Length: 545
Image (tube, rainbow, N blue to C red):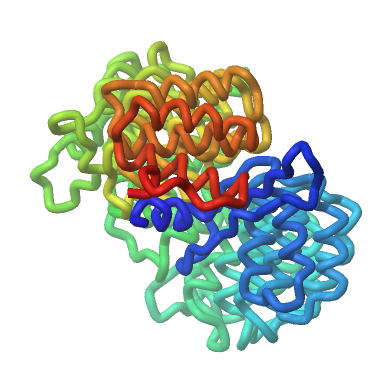
């Protein structure tokens, strides 16, 4: 059946046990050939996932199952995951198991996870990245990143890209100042002043790639190497002066002193990626100056305000060859943080759907994200409106901006982040599965409402995610959608099915009652399928047509 196939593609993992005894349990397995990143399921399904994890015949699915347990925040599966980590031989499945243990916050397995990271280090890159990224995302990668930094040395023949993209960013994010001597040693170059690109400290050692050298030097500045910062501020802040290769890495090191303002303003007028790093540095500097009480800090804010105001016309000119949608929103966000009322107003003006209720650029997402972070009046309402527009269809290339907005709403404590469960992109829905970590009845209601008028994939995900929270409020939310006349037949059918999966076998009778009066084919099929799942019997002929 078409509907049955679409639901299995949602990758539900569920087991219900009838009241008569566990022998009648049946599984609802994940069958999404593209992966299990959107694999939602009720708490009733976690035992089935653990059974599959222990099944030696299911090598590929163990990778998927481990990820599902992590996404569902299945803390009760920690013993099963630990056992699997100890016995698993497939490095990719083992990486997924390690990542799941980190995601559910299992500190008892941390040493074993790090040991596995060491095992695949330099041997199975993708498995190592999964393991390392999980530690880093959970704020537990500092010690391991320092360990790597202490163990390797130039010329970094096999570590260059990994250092630049993964290890160094963790050292910066965790503000691991103890790594500064190591970074200085890496970045030392006796002929630096003789750069073929002109005067300045841009000379890359002959055995190191430009982008890695820039990442090292930028990290040195972020971790407090004031001597290097003083050396590069002048050249970076001089109009038309020679700039290093990959200048975004060097610009990323700025943002700690008012002496950085000329360089930050120069690159804020440029294009991405250096303009993005410049606005990040500007926002860091605004925070630094805001914590100071001296007159120099106020003068720095005034200068920054002046330099940015001078760029406003440039950023607003959508006909300019260098116009960048993201930078328009970032520009007004920085000015808004400086207290410029016109930019605070403009930021909220940008935080609306653009054309016929649809979103065509990243501007609304980015503007709303920063407005929410600043707690501007009406910002969360605007963000909720934007997420509702995104559930009806979004440019898949904008997923990072949508995910950032969902995260900002969650961090702001607004339950409407759960609208993200109905958005079409799977990684956005993963972010919205914060619902699994701290589900609330209010978030349940928002997810259910968002399912109406969403894409089919988003609608299914939003409704089936509600099976994570077996409360009366979530049950009522699903019931309201199942009986809602303005919802599509498909949405009502999925809501009906999700309600049965939430409440258990007894609710099949409720579907029987619906099927007596609702002639919608999909609802009939839903009742038939649930009868097979829970009663172990074939449906009556009139229910299967």
